[in-house]
Every structure is written in structure tokens, then in C-alpha cells.
Image (tube, rainbow, N blue to C red; front, side, top):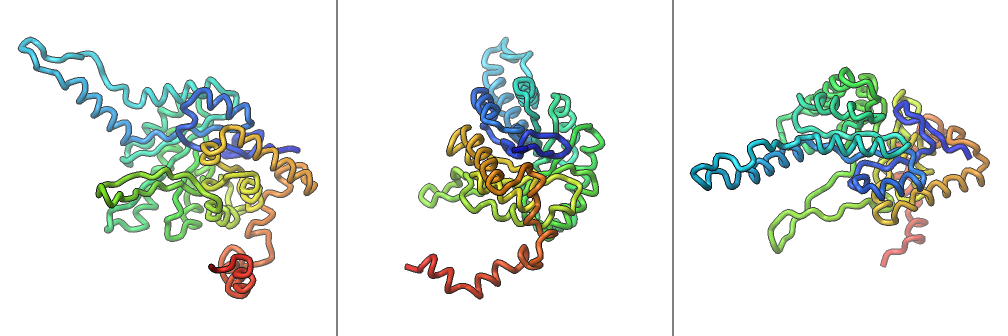
Amino acid sequence: MDLSTHYMGIPLKNPLIVGASNLVTDKEMVKKLEEAGASAIVYKSLFEEQINLEAAELDEDLHEYDDRHAEMIDLFPNVEHSGPRAHLMAVKELKESVSIPVIASLNCIYDTTWEDYAEMLASTGVDGLELNFYSTITDANKTPQEVEQTRIEILKRVKKKVQIPVSVKLSPFYTNALEFINRLSEDGADAFVLFNRLFQPDINIWNEEFEMPYNLSHKGDNRLSLRYAGLLHGRLQASIAANTGILDGEDLIASLLAGADVAHVVSTIYRNGSEQIAKMLNELSDWMKEKGYNSIDEFKGKMAHSRITEPFAYKRGQYVDFLMKSKEYFKKYPMR
């Protein structure tokens, strides 16, 4: 079977990409993922606030004992925080250690610093850059137009600074995600990652403190990306990556049928190990053989909105179908 595809202009041997996570900071794991058949790796995001926090913590540690003695001015006078250099070095080392494409990921807190960090990451030799627009808007006075225009301006500035392809990783929480994606595409986005796995805080009611639960994807979490991949296929020049809830071969195949070019996987590797990559690719190959498909292009987007005859399938169809056939569903899933 020909599993090859393209993502943000980069040729890939198959559509299975290891998404951004701490998995890729383990050199042994990276080796296993490549051997298992991963077609590309997204290095974990460079978060600007993490860099700033590390700098502040190191500065505090370095100067903790200053002036403890009359003749002591600075215990470590020549030590400076490396800033993003440690992250950049790790990205460069990963790129040099594998034969598959490597994509860097970036998330900044200041609008003016995106292009600076983007240039730094591009200098490591990575094949592409992912702009991770993960953020929670807490300013009730900021309009949707302001939020979207800020992101568009960031993309345009980054595209002017780097020569490598640029993808955009989005959350689904936009008033009209389709219109916003269209505008980002027109302004140069080479791919879209749909959607961000949002980490939501929980509250420990006994300690009365915030806590962060282990937030892996579950079966069925892929349905939102499935819907939007189906709505967008054939309407963009940019590539589409399905993200969140791609746990097995069936999820991967469904994403491709909807119109995604690739899928990013993380949670299923945490649960099942690197061998899950090979298993999912084997499931894809077996399904293609059984269906008589020789390449991904023969069925990619077959179930996209633009290619099916049912006009409401991606809109209200499932809901209406459920209402009309609710008795059948309840027989299958009886209430207790």
C-alpha cells in the first residue's frame, strides 16, 4: 500500500505524526517512534512564559547568597540564564538524530515576540514551524474581531521572517472557526492542526487548591476534528491535521475519509507505547487492502462535506437522525 502523503508542503511516508509533547524529549523514545514508523515529529512547544519563569527562578537561585559576606558581591558573577538556548539546542539535536521531518512548535505571551522566537527555531534546521495559539481569553472587553486579527497579524509577521512552512494550531472556540481558518489560509498558513487539547484546571475541594488532572484523550474525542476536517476538505490550499482523540487505526482512517491529510497522536502513545504507531499503520494498510485502495489519495476526503450528497450530514443531520430513531438507539443502549 502507498501510504505517502503531504503535510504543509512536506512529503511524508505516511499520515501518522507524533504530536507536540514531552515524549520527544526522551532520546530512546524518539528512536523507538521513528523505528515504529512515525512519519514526522512535532517537538514540544516553546512556551515563552516558561522561559521567563526559568530565568526568574535561576536569577533568584544565583543571587540567594549575595552579600552574605562583606567582601562577597556576587557568588556567580559570570553565569547567565540561557533563555531559549537550551530548548533550541534540544530541537537541533533532535533534528540531527532522526531521518524524518521535525516540526518546531511555538507559543508566546507577547504579540511582539512571536517572530523573534520563530526565527530562532527556524535557525535550528527544522522542516516546519507550528504556531500554537493556545490561550484563554480572560479580558471580557476584548472583542472576537480583536482576538482573531491579533492572531492573523502574528501569522503574517512570522511568515515574513521565516522561509519554512508554517502551520497554525487552533482551539475550536471561535465564533465562526471556518471563516477564521479561511482568513488565516489566505494570509499564508500552510496547515491547520484541529484542534488543541486544552488543559482545564480542576479544584481540590478539600485542599481548596487548583490541581491539574492527567489529561489524556479518550475514545470519541476525535469527533470535533472529524467534523471540521470534513467541512474544510477541498476548500483550502492548506493541509489539515486531525488532532485530539486519534487513538487507533479506525480513528486514523475516519480522519482521512473526512479529509484530513495527517493525524497527530500523543495520548495513545502514552497509553500503549511506541509500538502503537506500527499497529495503527498496519490497521490502515489492512483496511486499504480489504477496500481495494492502493493509495491514500484514492479515499482521502471521500466522506467530506463537499463530496457527499446528504447536505446536512455535517450540520444537523446526526441530531435529527437521533431524534427520529431514538427508540432504536435506546434499544441498543438501554437505560438502567
